[in-house]
Every structure is written in structure tokens, then in C-alpha cells.
Image 1 (cartoon, rainbow, N blue to C red):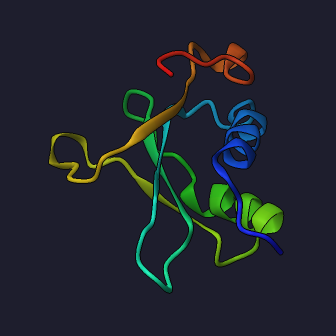
Image 2 (image 1 turned 180 degrees about the horizontal axis):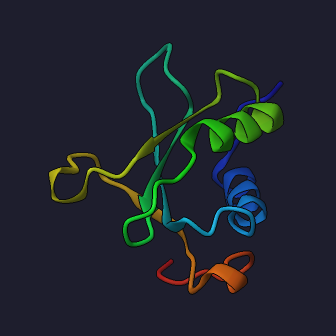
Length: 102
């Protein structure tokens, strides 16, 4: 299976966002260390909600392979990595296909 590129990840996130309204912002960064996933997805939760990183990770693993993508929660002010916004969910019903902040 080939490594996903950013367009592959944008498509996957757009598809997943509709069923994960608990995620307010979907971020990514490219992992640059050998032996780590190619893409790291970082989830910023909607107020007080807890995104299901395990099921999101499983859906992405089914699409790209288990070693291609990792998922974790956003660290807020303690975030040290440079992140790139993939999608901002305007609201729970319009999450899929709606992106701001490119």
C-alpha cells in the first residue's frame, strides 16, 4: 500500500468528519522520523467532548494501512509541533465538506 499524501488525508478527514461531530478542528503534521507514521492527525475537541481517537485511527488504518497514520489529541497551549489545519467543523450537521482556515 502506498503512503498517503496530504490530499488523501484531506479526503479521508472530510469523509470522517460527518460522523465525528465531537471534533472541532482536524490538524495534521508530517512525521519525519523513520519508522513512524507518515501522517500524524491531531484532533481538537469541541467544547468538553472527547473524540474517539481509537475509532478514527481504525478507520484511517483501514484506508491507508496500520503504519501510515497516527491520531492523537491536541495539546492546547502545550502544543509544540507545527500543525496544519485540515478542516474546521462549523457545526455538527455541516462538518463534512466544510473547511475554513486553509
